Amino acid sequence: MRRVAITGIGLVSPLGHSAAQVFEAACAGRSAIRRLDTAASQRLLAPLVAPVDFDGSAHFDAAKLRLLDRVSQFAVVAARRALADAALCPSPTECEAAGVFVGTGMGGSHTMDEGYQTLYGGPSDRIKPMMILMGMHNAPAAWIGIEHGFRGPNLTYSTACSSSSVALGEAWLRLAHGGLDLAVAGGAEAPLSLGSMKAWEALHTLAAIDPVDPAASCKPFAKDRSGLVLGEGAAMLVLETWERALARGAPIHGELIGYGLVTDTGHIARPSVAGQAAAMRAALKSAAIDVSMVDSINAHGTGTQANDGVETAAIHEVFGKRAERVPISATKAMHGHLLGAGGALECVLSLLAMQQAVALPTLNLHLPDPSCDLDYVPNTARPGAAGRTMLSNSFAFGGTNAVLALRAAP
Image 1 (tube, rainbow, N blue to C red):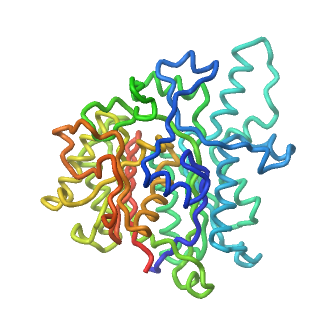
Image 2: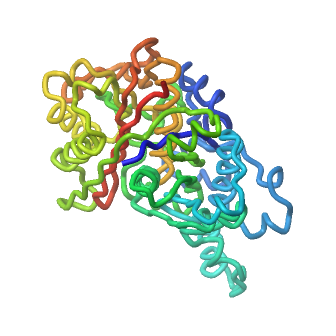
């Protein structure tokens, strides 16, 4: 097993467009969640979103932009930023074995929504000729590979909310076992189309609007939590073997040391303690560490009644008495739930927390829930608490539970 370094970070995020911006906002506890104020929002019961300030025309010429759904725009820009951060411009020979691994839960949501609106909402049968190529789930990964000439594996993972954690974990396996030396991996999601938001609303998982402050509507692990808030964006990371990174003097943000992947077969939308606990144990085993070596956890922490109680119980089951002493951050209260991109963004936040030695806050935790009785770093960042080894949890509809084990750079 070869060591795998994370040498590049690229972001298109509700909290900002650089690692410094995102960490500063998260550390300060600034929420990107806001009330949506558009004509479409009148058709939503609780029009809350965590949007990205992003104009595709600033990054692509008009001809290229017409080929890219918003999700692909996010992915390509985040990949560019990750490669620039890694100070990496691979040679043609290196590109032969450079891979792309991307997670997305919903693919080209805006393109598909627009196409169906044209077909069913009016008399026109004129669908965009490129609708399939824009809307397909593997378009973001494909465009990254095309732009950079990466001719190694180009793979897309769609496992709902764990998609990008799976993408990162699968990329890690390829590098750790010697199949690749370099990969761009992460996730992208653009689910804020009307059709998508109405579908999530119908599932009764979205948060109610906080009557005092809409930005405080997502309340992970709090007694008054009411659901998740949809966000959009992308997070891409450059992974390379430790030896390669050292040889070229690359910046090292941290190390991916393990990956747990477990399928929970009890119910397609109902998490289980056993499934989540098994995923954490698998990550620990993969990393060859035990619970005494884990300094902090980035929780999945959606703010739904079902997930937060189950995740708390699963952490208790894995960590035993030590569970009460492990700081746990749930950052979705700030950036929303990026679905298939959520795991990658939270992996980045975990790396930055360890770099800066700060445990990030779980916002809006003012009413404790007796069933959620762990140390969630409530409301305010905690200096000196992140430690050097973290788990980052991602649990998903469909039962694909993925946990990444991360270590700070020396």
